[in-house]
Length: 350
Ligand SMILES: NC(=O)c1ccc[n+]([C@@H]2O[C@H](COP(=O)([O-])OP(=O)(O)OC[C@H]3O[C@@H](n4cnc5c(N)ncnc54)[C@H](O)[C@@H]3O)[C@@H](O)[C@H]2O)c1
Ligand SMILES: [Zn+2]
Ligand SMILES: [Zn+2]
Image 1 (cartoon, protein in one colour):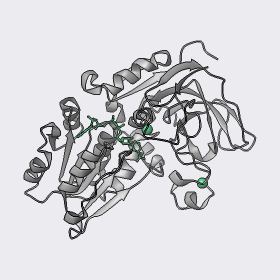
Image 2 (spheres, rainbow, N blue to C red):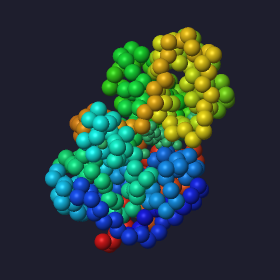
Image 3 (cartoon, rainbow, N blue to C red):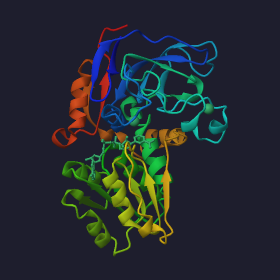
């Protein structure tokens, strides 16, 4: 099969690779029909994720059909259409029993990180019964790819951890797919204002179309002052960091209102200054989280009933053969206006 392989910081290639095989009775092999590239894949390529070793097939998002199941898999059979969660969970360990699947003792975020991932024609999914979701008949598969990671991430790490409330003021720093997923799902709670911050005007236009009540381009270096002005000097009750660099986290520290929450979503590869000399008396909370995907069944219902439409996030489509071009397009989003893009397998492959 063809697979996109990470060869160390800055290096990747589409190569021939052995088709994965069942290794444990609880495994399934999924034939991928659609996968995507995530901001986290770009972090891996920057060298920010040391658990991902050279030689790894990248990708942790996708939908497909079951090609084969191990003898211990009871919930799925060959031919079933499935959504792959970016988090593998055994369902039995202490963390899984708490719903904190991201820290599963034998799973968590391993796909496209510690084990081979979904940017390939086939992928092995461990703990298949508790890490895959059956795709309802008639559902739009393209929309569901956004449920592997970005919708649960925006919702759990941003909206739930950020304690978005009716009537509250929300600022989301970063209008990439994750920031926009937080924007879509924050609207479940009817906040009074949602202000999106980015360097890229195209993404801010999209944010307005997705329901942002205000947008701030932070490239002039005055974002904090602008946001304070927009919020009558208070700042925001919820500030969601959806970029993953020190400058954006520091901006969140400057604009959080007294009693507010900074919900960090971004993957950080370097240390970030924490200004406790300014924050110690402001009653704020800082939350961090690796997505658990515990909200996936609920989000699946909101997508299938058209309460939210994640297809708005899909801007580009490529065959798997052109995944290197897809990475180029995604990493130069300001020029290409790319948000998410999915890849389809080549025709005629086994
Ligand atoms: N916590 C988790 O479980 C989890 C899961 C998935 C992704 N993530 C992380 O979430 C973050 C966002 O993911 P994404 O796919 O949307 O990434 P992305 O790279 O597509 O989007 C990031 C956005 O931030 C903007 N940006 C960059 N520098 C900025 C700055 N200085 N000021 C304002 N905006 C700036 C970019 O223009 C872009 O629109 C990444 O760090 C990703 O690794 C975390
Ligand atoms: Zn992802
Ligand atoms: Zn577990």
